[in-house]
Image 1: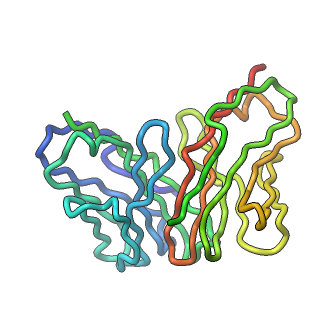
Image 2 (image 1 turned 30 degrees about the vertical axis):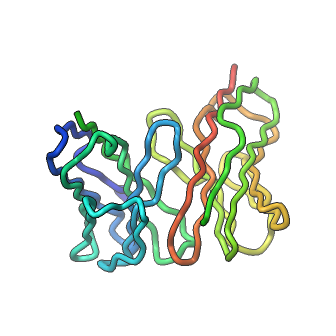
Length: 114
Length: 112
């Protein structure tokens, strides 16, 4: 069990640029989740995948955000035309095939938009 | 809409004191409830979970939580805290549809 990995760990970008983050889940986990966390708040659910299917998407996920999991393994989260309000920690988690199973979290990608 | 409230933002205790952190959820359907902990510099990790059965659940490191359906609560307890319990604690509710909602967290500081 190598855990959930995320890359990059830190990203600084200028407003208006596009950014893409990658998440590699634990290999036998079918579910993959994306969250956003800002200072003083808990993780906010963005979206989740069951294998390659995106099954739930938060209203927080505006049309500038898109997530993919093309082969049911790693996932990418892209933010287009970044805004300063997008500055946050972006967390990825994975789990087995049921809500009864715990989510294993990655270390997160810290995005700073200047 | 589903929501999770954690009443205490910051709790400071001395070692050996008892701990209770409040968590209330708001959701009309079936929920699964979790407590996660984040130690300084580490990832979020599971402390304990409830999805059915005995409403008193026990987790790692001597933590337990009680699900009280009538009060929509899932409070975390530990009879005697240690300095190593200093961390941030998050309560979370998952629906069967897969969406999860976290509370804003409680920072626990245990003084040696």
